Each structure stands twice: as structure tokens, then as C-alpha cells.
Image (cartoon, rainbow, N blue to C red; front, top):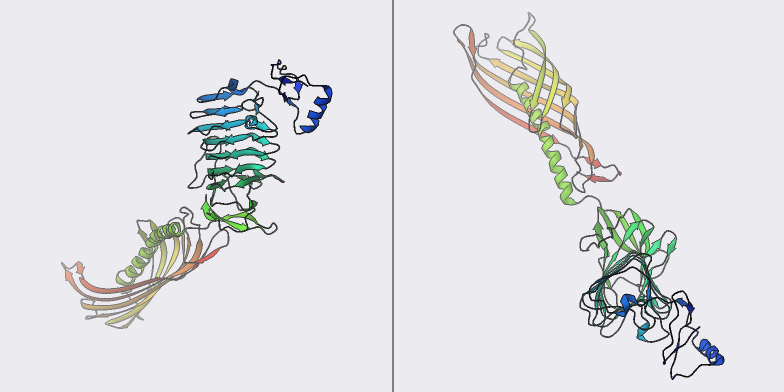
Length: 509
């Protein structure tokens, strides 16, 4: 134990454990007086004595604190305009006093218009404030380490903290942060990870005005920020760090979220009347602040799948419609080709019967689709000038675009009736025909953005009607020419269907 008498005693070495206090007036203290002072100053504590931070000089440039230092109740680490200070990992910056402003560990002067502090180590005081931003001071703070004040605030802000990012810990006997004075101080942006860590919960406690913007940092379902600010004045915009509207800080990754209920992210709020941004989206998820089910005046962050957006879903449907166009085109071609061309029977036996078999291959492009079918046609010659018949066309296979599967629910079928002016087939001919087709179609939509790969099954029904007038005549004895005029009407209808995605969520299409 030692005195710093006004006459100037020598300071102890850095290895001494000391109880420091001053005696004014130059008298030699007695042992009894020492004991009395020890009782009166019970808040005094034992700590290591280090050199003054930055040699006691106010910082106005880039400085790295690489060794432990202590203000010695003379002058803490002091920052003014231009200061850009980094405290290295494992380094302790400390200061203390039972009373008086000289005991603050780190001080940002009121004249500081722009300063920066990155703490990777420890800022410590017992009785005073760990970091004091004076009225008028302006500072950006990133804390990867610890800012600790056993008795008072870890951070006392009386000026402006442009941005405070905390992925370490800020603690104090009065609270983590004191943000109350006249005129009102400001924490413009507060990014915070301190709070829930595994099974332990040590939220940042704030006394005074709310930060203008509070961005919760989420590392995993059991590691995320919590803020306790009981009935504090001001309004606060809530967001998830890394979301649109937030700014990433060097060395601090964007939040990683999952479907989860993050408990007690805001505490001491009887309502959310002072909080905006309680609902939003982030990385494909929706989130909402909801009242805690167990803790009064506490709010949980509920994160859940956002579901598909209307724009992305419409884009996905357009892609499917483009693919289905080839199926519609193939259906129209198949039914009309059957009516107007080869699906006919005009060679009869003695009983007036005709039967023929064959195959059909149809292909369309943009997008590509092809099908192969087996065909049978049956006809009957009712009179020398009239014949009737029908056909069946059964798909063997279909090659459709990705995401489209086509199969026959019923084969392509149809009937026809033909009148010829002459039994030889020459002269005028009138043909009436109908075709009907019913196909099963299974569609799986492409995923576009937030859209889902909805899968559904439906029917595509095709009906075709043809009326044809032609005139046949012989040319050079070996050639028969038949120019014709035809009218065709085709209807293709796709039924509505219910699509279902992989999460078994149904929606109408």
C-alpha cells in the first residue's frame, strides 16, 4: 500500500499490487488514518498498475493498442477527431476512480467529429464508465471483445454513436449502455449478437433513449442478440442484420436464419408501438415479432418459410404454359390430320367391308414434342356412292418437354361419312368427319426464384370437326388429282387442377 503525496512519491513497479489513493496537504499519514481511509473508500479495489494508454496523449490518428495500459486515474485512452483505434486481442485497457471523470477507461471527447474504435480485447473499469462518449462526440464502435464496468455503465453515450456493432459483450452494474442525457444522445445503428448463447441468456440492457435502428444478429438457432430496454423513450426500427436496409461491418457476417422461434429478442416492451419493422422477409423466410408465450413484456422473433411470391409463381406458370403449347399443337395436328387425310377406307371386299392398319409419327418444335401411335381404320360401303367408317389411334409413346408427362386416357377416335358423285370416286366428293381425344397430363412447374415445384395432374380434351368438298379427275391416265375446300373447327380444353408441392401445401391452378 502506498501514498501519492503532493510532494511526489515514486510510483510502484508494474508487478506491484497496490491500493492507490491521494493525501492532500503533504502530511504523513498514520497507520490509523490509513485504516480509516481504507474503510471509507471501501469501493476502492486492487488492480495491476500499467503505463498510461498511448503515453497519456490524446489520439488523433491511427493507433493500435498492443499492450495492456491503464489511465491511473489520470487520463484514460482518449480519442479526438481523426482517431482510429484498434485494441488487440488479449489486451486490457483499464482505468478507475471512486469518483471523478479521470477514471473512465476510454473517452471520446466532445470535440471529436469523427472517430473509430475497434475492440478485440478488454475495456475495463470498476467504479466508472468503460467507454464514455462525451456530449458532442461522434464515434463508430465495433466490439469483438468485452466492455465491462462493474458498478456503472459499460458504455455511457452522451453524444452520437453513428454505429455500434457488438458481437462480444457489454456489461455494467447500472446497465450495459446508458443513453440518457440532455440534449438527447443518439445511437443511430445498433447491430447486436449479445444475448442468447446456448442455454445462457445475457441480453444487452439499455437505459435511456432507444437506438434509431436495431439490427439483431443471428448466428444459429441458439446464438442471437437480445435487447432489454424497459419502457425507454424514443422509436426504433427493427431489422435482421444482413437484410436490405442494413450495412455489413467488416469481420461480422450476415445473419443465418432458419425456421425457428428466437425467444425474448426484445424485453421490457409492453407493446410494439415504439418499434417499426416487426414484420418482414429475409433470405427466403418471413419473420414477425410476436408476444412471448411465457414472459410478460417480451417479444420473440418468429421465422418461417416465406412461401412463393406472386411474381415468381407467375413466371413459373408461364414457363409451364410454353411447354404445354407443344402438347396442344400436337393434339390439334393429330386430330386434324386424321380427319382430312389418310384415316379413310376406300377399298372394299365383296361384302362392302374395309379394314386397314398403320402407324403415325407426329413431331412439333418450339418446344419439341413427338408421339408415335398405332392406327386401325374400319369402313363400310353402304351404297355405291356412300361409305362410312371409324378409326382408333393409340399412343405408343410420347416425348414431351421436361416437367410434362402425357399419356392416353382414351385413344384418339373418330367417325367419318363420305358421298361420291360417281361410284368410281371421280367427280365431286363431300366428306364429314369428327375426332375425339382425351389425354392425361402431369405437370411439374420449374422453380423460379421463390416459386415452388408444384405438381398436378389434369386432362386435355380435343374435339375436331371437318367438312370437306373436293373434285377428283384423272390426269394422263395414271394420275388422280383432287383439289378440295375444307372447313375445320377444333376445340382443346384443359381442366383445372390442384397442384401440390413437396411440403404438401395445396393451391389452386
